[in-house]
Length: 507
Image (cartoon, rainbow, N blue to C red):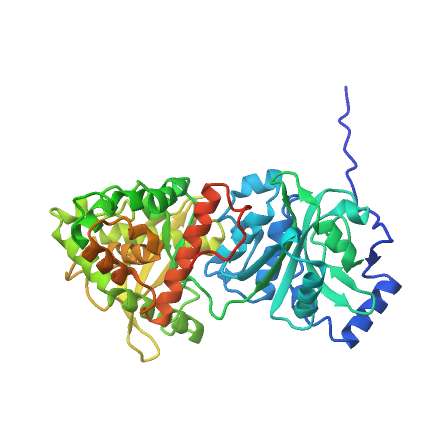
């Protein structure tokens, strides 16, 4: 009988020193103390509070980014596990499928894409587009404050370490010895360590063989507000490539036809060819809570977020474009059959059941997994919380195997009542995303050049006026520009060009 032999595996690596200095060594501690005294460790404290170990050997980029996003207190706007909103590697999947990252890692350009999609303010520099002196200035800037952080993409061989390309955040700077502290997210391999800044620059100057581009660094900071208050784009469903191509490539050609004479016809040619599963591409950012966690009162945080969502929704519905979308959808015969749909459900109970099932998945941390919930019952009611105006609450009881859970979803109030396909006045309350406001938001998010092929000059000027972001209220303007940046980045990912252009996405 043959005995199976257990593989011993690897337990850490010895940090080559020099050139690196172990953070926990006596020399490393002295560098730390001196850097604190000189005020160049201010960014360290928040980073170390969220320091994590990459959960997969190729997840160094994802771990570095989730660590920095959490340190900057950027709200992901969706649940991680249980009721908690928190950035985790598993949530950073908008620019590259996680299975692919797990196998091959992620490129510098796609990490930049992920940071933008996550709502951060990002400046990205390859070494052939910057200089050592510029890099040092950025390191000093982020080391003397806690409002920005740097992630470097470098080759380990420069430090005599095993491995190839790697990402990790910079945790501090020692001006006297011109050394940077690398908070290595591969903590199973190497501890945090100090390295000469010039040597870190040389490690970033290496060329990534996969993209044939120089490596570099990301300067990541917090935007002045969390983007994506009500809407966001998603590439979780495989149809996203087709939808992004349709919106960015096909729509500009469709509006060039001679018979496009008015806004109604523009909307007709755009909406009549929407790809299937279009509703999987643009998502409503829901406010979900367990029923046992809820009460008749909303927390200040819940009330604040819901009020912002309602304000964005109100501003969408006050645009001239929204009125055209409503009129167009209302004019269609057999509206609920022929109007563009954002989901497979066309009636209120089905929509409510889907919302509650998704909410249960979010709360349990299983959203997008093979684990499925069945909604036994739903109800839609008004909750008058804190003595304020009524709040629409979708409540459901969902079942997964033998477990049962009550879920509440807080819904932004609709200033006007809409029918079940969201296209005109009715006695039935709208459950969002409704067709008209979502389609309006997406049309506003399309690049302005989408419409320049319209041949009728008067119509062209009218469309430019309807989709212009310049005169939009600030909340809606930021919402639209965030969607536009997401669309621009997803299109670059679809074309595999994200590593060629690291500039700020078009606004």
